[in-house]
Length: 384
Image 1 (tube, rainbow, N blue to C red):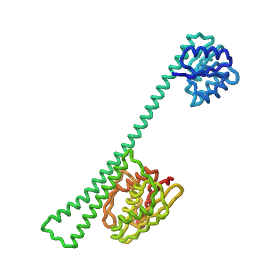
Image 2: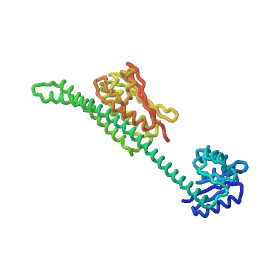
Image 3: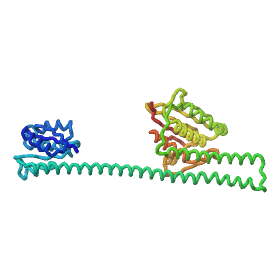
Image 4: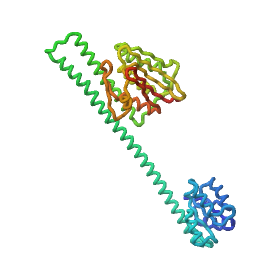
């Protein structure tokens, strides 16, 4: 290993003598010199020596002042320092220098063997210290990484538990309904008229749609959990996305005689992941339809505020009280309610919306009032 060593002394002959000894040690040394502590500090700003050999008594800034200045800086406090003196050799002076942080002490005059031994020992101790420090930092980084991974696993486990709870509740219910209908259809003693049959078929369709929606959300969630999933960002026209989603829900809008207004400016585009944006708007739109009574109104609005796009889905539905609002984004609370026309659903879609928006450095919020409706808004940063 090649060491860089700084020799600080106001006597040129002392610098030459110490430099000769260092070169004879054949450590591949880079040797620098300074006539006092002040000059040494300026030099240390340009180089970071592996060892400093400094005389105590020097003009402008002596060795002890230099040592204290180095120890006061986080950048230089760990540089090993050997003090050299012909005058400050009493016990009190040596005690003062060691308390200030000196690594070793050489009394002038010193012989070659002592010099080599003390310099070698100091460098070896420093090498060992740096190795331990590096290993300690690596261990600390690994511990931090493990801690973060543990937290992420805990969150995923909590999320998994909630999803299983939702599946248990919201898949069993429609399956039980379908099972009951199959019993009716297979019972030869039960005669159904056309009106009853149409009603039962409608129920089957509703229950199947509920299961399909749940499966779609589960699949999307599974994809979103892939560690290497990359966001596919492009220019997204919110007006067009909203129009596509409204066409997807056309039958449900007509069935409940809902008025739909798309207030997203057709000329405004934002740069983001179209799949994420579509998924969130679709789920919020589905919730708005579910909880808006016949003859109600649903509006999609877009505002650009500074560096963020704020997309809102506004309905004139049943609204929510404070208790529901306080727990609506709580992952520990599983809450599913039937819609105004008996629609069924899960709390999974809203939970996934929140997670996906936060992954995109945005936020999801809601305002609601009983009997007046709800406004779900999400913000996403606009990137160019």
